[in-house]
Image 1 (cartoon, rainbow, N blue to C red):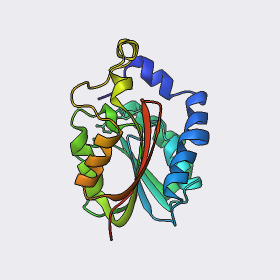
Image 2: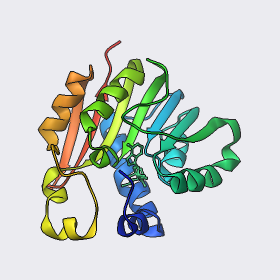
Image 3: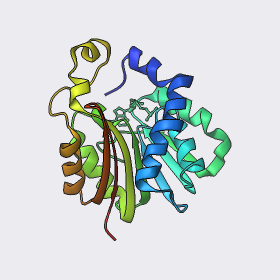
Amino acid sequence: MRLNSVEYALMNNPLRELLQRRFEARRLRRLGGPLNGGRVLEIGCGRGVGIEIILNDFGADTVHGFDLDPRMVRLAARRTARCGERVSVWLGDASAISAADASYDAVFDFGIVHHIPNWRRAVAEIGRVLKPGGRFYGEEVLEPFIVNPLIRSLLRHPLADRFDRNTFAAALRQSGLRQIQSEQLGRSFAWFTALKPA
Ligand SMILES: C[S@@+](CC[C@H](N)C(=O)[O-])C[C@H]1O[C@@H](n2cnc3c(N)ncnc32)[C@H](O)[C@@H]1O
């Protein structure tokens, strides 16, 4: 589901970039460790800050990113143009990822799966495109935040069948991922890393 105008503005500003770099990415790196090069996918890449983080802070060789919103794809492509062949960005849907089975060493989700009506399908797709030995890094927004009346009045999310930390971890396991590390902040936000067994 595409962002409404309020969330679009919340995602595209310098404060959000600072939070993503200094807080969210560092937490994921602490939970899942750095990458040793590799071919990495970011689902719902937004304006491309995550792609830069995955290249520069996690150490990926190449990063592919896609987003459902053509405006985001344009922003991400512009932002990462200087990375040349190390980055490619396209329009796509995380519930039907246009990539071969077992084609990525890692998949990143900076807060997008909660935007997907059939989020379980997207988690299964993440499991499908990861290589054996590949890693998932995700931060997610949990049901209590999404159903909060104030948040509902400001932001647009699918409301049926949302997840808490345990439900999301169970979906990762059902998609073939193991050794799941997770942390939660209050009732609303959680970070996950997981491994697809070799
Ligand atoms: C909360 S924003 C996060 C954007 C970016 N990951 C960041 O951290 O700045 C969620 C993003 O997911 C995208 N999105 C929503 N549903 C999607 C889907 N089914 N497939 C791919 N991207 C999707 C939205 O267009 C939006 O860019």
